[in-house]
Image (cartoon, rainbow over all chains, first blue to last red):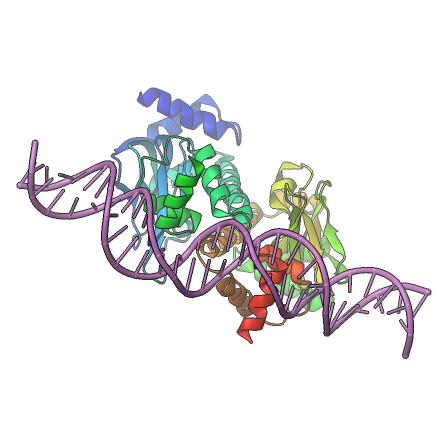
Length: 194
Length: 194
DNA sequence: GTTTTTTTTTGCCAAATGGCAAATAATTTC
DNA sequence: GAAATTATTTGCCATTTGGCAAAAAAAAAC
């Protein structure tokens, strides 16, 4: 189990740069397994993030409370991606977001200290991290941008394409706020699609 | 003129890391002034980007054609920011976006070659660029994300707040597609606000 | 396996936005 | 500066989405 998870992490990293066996072993020695049950939080608003997670299995969501006090799901993070409030993590400032498991999750955790050591030890580590960061952010921008000009039904169907099994297992409110519509509207959209 | 522009670039970079005088002089020697007239393109879809621009004065927009063939303005880039299709630039693949001056612009250009030399010569350059990249992308995500749950009038007013003088000087179509609404809807929103 | 609580659906109507075409207004061309 | 072109506004009506509350369904607690 743990073994496969570590390999998934290493394979993910190898997409972005080369690593020799010694470096791979170092990374594996620093990564710790964390199992989260559905609904448990990986990180919370108000706290300075002290670790990043590589999702081996499961799905997380990132959410926050807007100025009207409504809980908004900002995005979902699928397995084989990193989860962290990158802004707060880099700047070492309290996060304004919650990161929550919406299914049972198996994560690999790298602490700030571990990341610092990897950065100091592995030539090219910073470059790998930098590429991963910008790739993830570019994907978010490219996902969000067209959503603005699509109608809610289209946005819902694209969510279904990306997370086919998820729609009926998570609270309607998570999905509605992500899509930018009310719960009742989403409920009607669902009815019309069937 | 040029002098002040260079200082603006250097001051911008210094927000993200230290540079000594020699490094500053090197950067200044590599940056070339480019003046764009309103409506001219800085880069075009289909071409591999070969340079980045620091906007000294003026405003650019990034746009693309969606699957319906509609031209969508993805975002506006204000002065004292970098403009580039970061994804295509990094991956050296053809861009899917146009970057166009929507006012007369004064830009400082860094070519791929110049950037490579800066990267090889200046310790910490890559880190500065990496920080700038992720900051810009995070800002875009944080801008786009709440727009989904706002109504069009609110989105328009936020645009007015950010670019107070621009709204009546650019084609309605640029703004409407950015806001995710039709031209006629935007026209009516304008009328109602007055 | 009831009871309680939470979530989702539905009805009703209002408000927002879209689609299309015609009318104005503004800009460009000659 | 008149004509032609382009951009914006407006009218009309359809569709989408919101707001609120009640009903129904599902999930949780006992």
